[in-house]
Image (tube, rainbow, N blue to C red; front, side, top):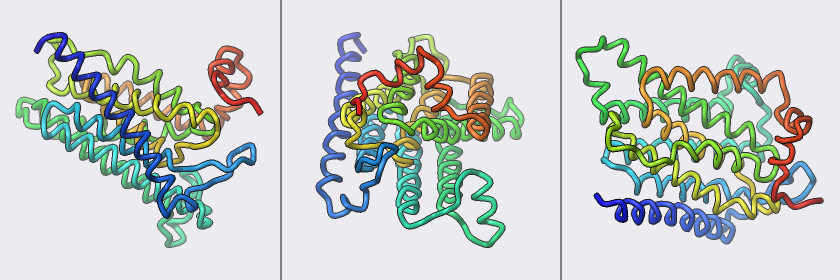
Length: 298
């Protein structure tokens, strides 16, 4: 494949992800569910959660288009649509008075015999993450490599699934101010979207690069209205983008890389229980400037 062909192909993937995101957000905002997706943000303004399902559709469509095998396409669809779907379900449950928040809240609800929307989201994304990781390892031959013990192969799938689910959660943790989560996603996607080299030993590396490209393009398409406070990701959009980023990462790395990433996302999730990311950003000049960049001033 020539350089020109690859460039045109990647441009088409990015265009589909961006265009699909804009079209899907517009369609949701015109639908009969538009009023149900309105929320009040931290400033008291009314914003639309239409961005969540819109960006889920756009980013996932781009990732599926950029897949280099049916297995990878299935992995992208599974991770993106499931994370977006259960995230949106959790968003809707919030509007209906769902009180269980955080890991302790979900466990508490379970002990009382109630399956919270948040726990359904966690289980859904975790299951989808493991399924997507298994498909990635199947394409790379890691899952069927009998030279490795079965327990090691299964463990690697589990770690990969953990990275996908953890990334979905981490992006959601940053969705507290206009544009913040989208900026985090764009920065994280940049190195992952670099075209895979011809010498890469990962059969899924090209698909991973295209997935990261689709995520970045979808985030860019939604950025303006998010920064203006007109739309927001919600759990649905944040979880979908995070899950697809996690998929792009495990598609390009091996066992060591997966363990490093899992440790990283676990540390961030644990830190979020004790530290306010918003406070840290506000008290760090460079982070504060980046966070406020492009945001509509009140």
